[in-house]
Length: 376
Image 1 (cartoon, rainbow, N blue to C red):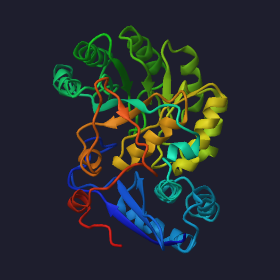
Image 2 (spheres, one colour):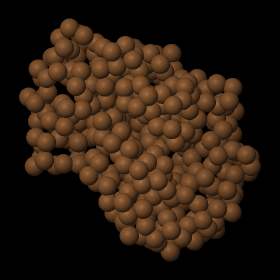
Image 3 (tube, one colour):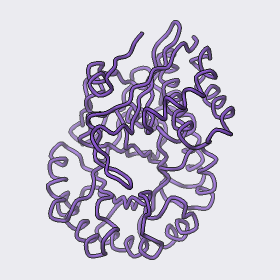
């Protein structure tokens, strides 16, 4: 079974809020789907946390290395792409694009084998997993309006992040968290994401430590991205001193970048993003390395239905991975998956057991948000 084509679908029109230095607009493209077509077999789907322009430019480099390759050997083919692009920006848009290709190749392998991807990358330790609703922070008086409708949908775990948190004063930070805890109730899981990968993040080690102490008083389950992405030594110190778990790692790519952070003990919870870090092949290796260092692996998932499907398969394959991130209100998650996603009565998501990622793409929704359909 050989690879004969790669097609690209940049998602626009309903891009969710959540900018970095500048707020995203609905027509901005930050998520791109890729489809890999084979000569006599299934089509595989992948997702890239990168704009369509950058994915297409990266494919200009990668396509000659990819077309004609064996479609059922994702790890070997992805490593070939990595090995042949060291000098072209390792860790940037090319690595992100390889992530989507790798996810799609695992989807193909699972379909060809008649098995869900999770069974192929480690086995199925669970049949369902708890999603946590991922929402932006608002002013304290608006937090209940953000959280209560999501709680009514059946979510029992919530992560709030970015917004004014860490950008104004300690009183505002605490007022936001207090309002969130009151809204979700004392028994819900509540996580806080400072958004330290934002441009010119102002919070340093002392701010992070004092904030961690405050969050612990509200029974916050973990403190995410408390520091700037390159502050390795500060992360190590924070993890040792903070009274609650410290998480991060969503901007790192490939296992080689994660290794010094895991060896140094920078995280209690590591959060690679499958649509950026190198795909399922790399994220599996990162997760295995984390487990060996006594660090929990919970994937970062601010992405698409395809990214969520990959995260669900990863969650099935690691015994300690009992959460996945769910970006609520995004049609790129809720509409593009044929049939959508439904929480069960316990607020859990069933992990698909159909072959591959267990996901079918709604072609009408794909056309609505990308302007094109899959061409076979």
